[in-house]
Length: 221
Image 1 (spheres, rainbow, N blue to C red):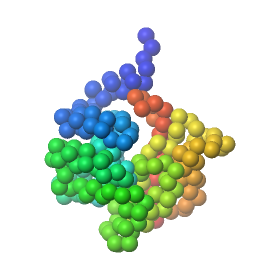
Image 2: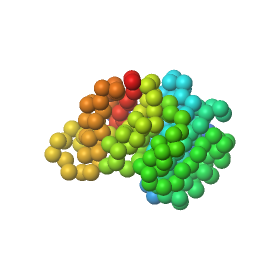
Image 3: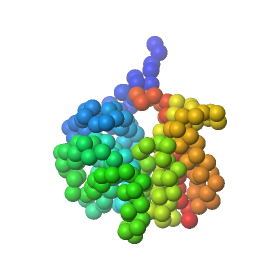
Image 4: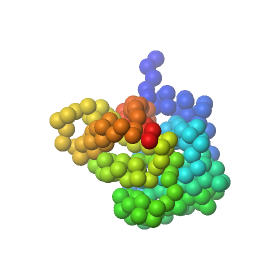
């Protein structure tokens, strides 16, 4: 009997990633956003939360909120004394996310900032906010290189930066691609490779969301 990626995802999530009502509702509500069903998978959400907990993160910056599914995972990971700042372009999406954060009981530790992510992040830089322990980049892919530059201004040595959706069903390996999303992935990875302040890897992922992957970057100085 052949098993699909979806079958394996379902098995692993049922075994290891129980979904409570708040998380299930957040996933379902993504249908009301401008990018339905674009959130990370449950297994990926749990991975991000474990990563934040392993790093001892108390301040998380997220670029790209949508329905707030991954935001809930981060907010639970940082605990009641932590803060999550999440940047969302569309007010309609932010409204859905706020409902979900309230339902999950974590709204008091999350700041939802509406507007273009680059402009919002630049305001954080200009305001001299305290450095973030983890930055999750999951907004428009062509802007990934700009988001990396801003993330470096908003972190400190030891901070982690995670860039989602960089594999693009393998298209990231296509040097001749003219897809802006692929170009954004290739450029951000090239920028990471060229920056001696950073060490990184990319993990490919398969499952209910198809073939993709994320870059895991650690700032060493």
